[in-house]
Length: 274
Length: 309
Image 1 (cartoon, chains in turn red, yellow):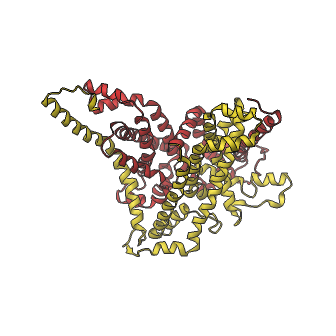
Image 2 (tube, rainbow over the protein chains, first blue to last red):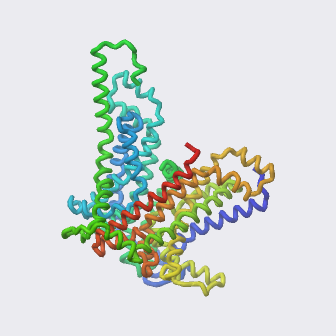
Image 3 (tube, helix red, strand yellow):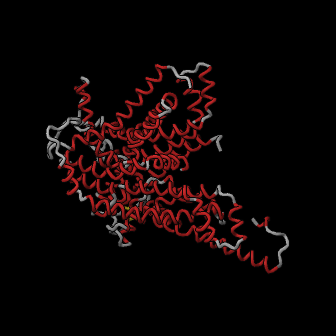
């Protein structure tokens, strides 16, 4: 492609400026985190005596191992269950085309427009009644349900494009519906299932409002929920708050750097299909 | 499916098949059942209950008193409640219009000048804020926008020291400051999504435009924007919902303050229901929020999908 030289450099300069704006906030909280605990430094000053110990202290006061475990438990409960039940529903709606499939699809898709703050009050009241308030189950169950509109829609989009010949051939061989699903179509759907799994893991890890409302104990929450509580306790100690925030971000950043291609692809496809 | 079967079937085979078809139907429904059950209990039922609660005065524990549409009237009468809806629309400008508009420009720049390594790195870096929890974005920017924070330090450095202030504590600037956080989070997402759309456009179109001597602006207006209507629609849908249903960023950075200058429906619902125990009133606001989102999303979807499928 032929592009004028001046335009080329102007464009590259714009990109570099935008990348700097994106990164600078992270650098600022990093330098701030190295200042002595309890002081109020300037935004981008490198400290005279870098206090690396702040990270150790934040690790202890935030109780990182407990938080990591708690978030991991929640992800491990939410994501596999959501994947299985949404794949089953997507299979029935998209491939088996059960009677009423289009009405079912509409019912699920309707959920995509619901803003979560709109339904949080009854969820809280229901969970009090079910005696699961203040347990991890109170986070896990609604999250699975909240993902269903997107997840079913996503899996249906895969199954609806699968050629029926595959199913017919298996049927002639006497396969039951379950065999058809588990032995033939689930292995073929590995790519969309993986993307969906990545998406739901990120969403679960970052979920804030639900843990805030239904779980009082930060050590039973997701990472984002725990971060909110950490901010509540250490809002006045800026260096410690910055150190803690960075620490709580480390798992996300590591996963993003390792799987950036898949995560970006999944989030984009997710938006376009939704 | 049945037309492909051999034509000559014995009677017993026929009844066997029709029975089997009926079992398949029931079996198929069983496949939907777990998802449907979860969705019904934790989404549909809460939706119905929210609507129901909105007609009552209730503190969440004691007896419920039927008040008809009074809660809705209260939302319209109390400026602090109705104001949350205006604030939400203001946030749409910051969370949606600016990231989508700017994202279009940036994506077309990447597409035109930086298709190589720089473009790939820019994609990843700009996408980063989309992956971190919104809570973290709120905490980070809460510090950047504070009086000793980075923003004021930069203003001082470039000689604009007169403009420094505690941005999130300022009645006039808190909402735009929250909006700025939204731009930071959503710009990369919009850029990368729109860029993906652009790479799908036939390169011959751009080639011929350039042979005709089209500059960046003409190319942008004549090819990029019209052909990316669907992707623009997707970006608008996602970001408008993010703005109208905003909670995390606002709660962490300002908690709705100072006064109610950054209070949005999500925050107000939370405060009304869980600190003031006005469950009915909070539910009325919640119903209005949900109706609002649907009313805003439908025209966007309609416009962006028109003529495509």
